[in-house]
Image: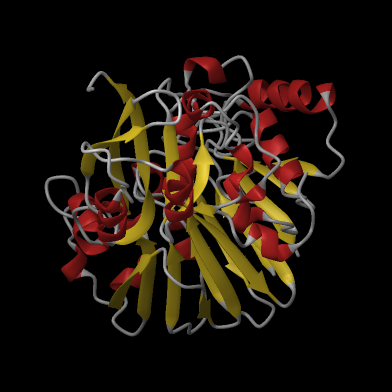
Length: 278
Length: 136
């Protein structure tokens, strides 16, 4: 499995010279299976460039949305294949309590927020609501489960050829507790992240920032490391960087957080364009 | 850190139960968290104090069995199996009521059942909240 980060930023896109290093686009990750199968995780602003980079006569695209906050959705209308009548696009994501996935997506994809509506896409569009039973897309086996974040929000566990990728870009497992539990039955996200080869996880805040942002649905870098430890993850990628953090500040934040208590597994700050192989 | 038994982790509770437990841990009122199968899967510390015993080791005891051990009485002093509480749990609807205990004088306990139904009409369980009543 090959993984490419097309957007690593949280909350809102933050392009500019101060963020070029880690990137200013919001959440989007490309996952390629050993056999060429493709998954796209989230449709933040990073999906626009991904759509332009896709080549070849692919007939099907699968976009797995963790949730419908704007930083995970804003790029969707700019994903080129949606306008191609010769392809199928499958969008997977969480339903709401009162509205189905189509209605919820339509809130953004409709005037006055966006000129193009879901029905205007020329591709064959199919929507799938989650969570549900584990499912298969090509050679990918996928488990989706709700995690702690405001509103219905999914994490994805993706298996391909024996490798496991876990993707939980927005997650606050420490909310409501003094410390993360040792009991996986009671730890949000454990069924997604357990013993993953690579975990891409929310690490939006510093330890100093977190106390003033409790309940906003995000983790500090230390929380991300602790969550990965609890789940015996083999490699952690820090993701969903705060838009207010410049490259320089992120370098300092990661150094302070990781040097204080060095993890026993590799931890890589996510940079736009970075690739990983499992 | 977790052990590596996948069966243990595959039993990760639904997020609604995890959130309800964390709510219960932060409340000063005694609560039980019941899963969709009617088992007591969590009691908060206030519940321990309320019932005068540690309930942490119940180990997913069916609430019906726990009620059986209570020897609860109804208003007339007759045996009560708290059928209205059990029925509310089974039917996923809110309910409240009261019962009496004779073990240490005549003590009246009120309860409220708060069903937890997730998006997509998924049954995940219920909260049962207890309180002391002044009723004779």
